[in-house]
Amino acid sequence: MPSSLGRRPALLVFLCSGLLGLVIAWRYASLGLTLSHYDARGHLVVARRIADSLTPGWQQIGAVWLPLPHLLNAAPVQVDALYRTGASAVAVSILSFAITAVAIGWIVARLTGSVLAAAAGLVVFGLNPNVLYLQATPMTEPLLMALTVTSIALLIAWCDGVSADVSGRTAASGPSTALVGWVFVLSCMTRYEAWPVTIGALAASVWVLWRGGVPLSNACRAVGRLALYPITSLIAFSAFSRIVIGSWFASGFFVPENPAQGHPWDAVKQIVWGLHELSGSGVLVFAVAGAALLTWTTLLDRRRPEAIMPLALMGTASVPWSAFVDGHPYRIRYMVPLIAAQAICAGVLAGGWRRARVPLAVVLIGVCAWELHPFADDAPMVAEAQWDRPNIEARDRVTACLTAGYRGESVMASMGSLGHYMQDLSRAGFDLRDFLHEGNGDIWLNALDSPRPFAGWILIEEKAEGGDMLAQVARRNPHFLDGFTRVCEAAGVALYRRAD
Image (cartoon, rainbow, N blue to C red; front, top):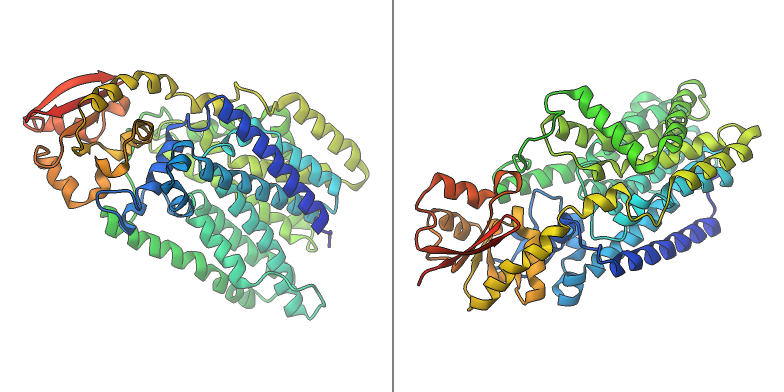
């Protein structure tokens, strides 16, 4: 069997990746881009509101976004400086970036037996400016990549151990079922893209064990024990979602506006186009050829069935594909997790032919040097993250109106649409407990009927995606804003004040 990345090379990859991530994060912080993406601020808000809320408690964890990223940051972001800068969440992203790099290197070295091929795969991942930008923010994609790629690496090692135990071969003990299972649980509680990856990986592990000489019934039982961990977590989360938001799964939180709505093939083309924009033609060609090589190897070589495992990472594409078919607005960042799979496939191609490893690796690294520019300020992800940036300064006028007359009254606002603005308002001295939002249960529901007894101010997003929940309520109920006066507006946000 091919050897994997050793401890010293793995440590070197981890340290170098962490240092690179830190340098990039410092650079984007100096450019004021750490929190430019509205979801970056939104994740900080969800983590902060667990304790900082009119109704603090476990219900504030939320159920539209999965809970792990917010639980990791729940304590640190109670410190105002960490909440306003996002520094603690960025630290999680940098650590995730370094872990992902190690896992990619381990998998490529394990499948090819070549450290040079592993290095080429790491260049594909580590020099991609879109990946580097996301790991410099509080976004959740870096944590998703770290946990999914690590879970695949652990699953490969776990299959080795199970096959050795059944066949009686002497082998180094692999990771325990509990360890692998819990890593899958953590990935499934980070982002929805991990769910199809987990399903695909577990199904592939049955194939790997069977091709490795384990009787099919034994393979199914072993994988079944492993699958209990993520299955239990998904059932628990669904029950939690039912309690918190009244449905088993989050839905209906976007306005359909994608031209691919109802057109599955168009959604596929959007994903391929996005991956091309994120990485370039040459890298994409290497990755596609590497994926074909992995498929060919696992079907024809009984000694290397584990080659199918990394292909499970392509399951991250199924979530944006489904969303685009449903009409979800196009976001290029949904394709960024595919870059981890792309790096593995490209690295495998570079090391797949023993006699041509050096020239293939050199060519791949050269293609990366030509197409990837790690410090590019015009990378697609960096550009997308700045969509809301012009509105930040414009909303300062609304902030000035609010702070001029604010006397401690509750500010009613939809966190689903204005959570990022609530984080902006922290720099003006506002805490989340100053806001009345969807997470406040019965208080919010009663305020939707008549806000006057509950709120002194109302913030309404009137334009983005046709207006937020409060805008829709105001359109349906002409008396909703009775007793409130419109005092100012900017960037689609209107501020109303209660007339006492």
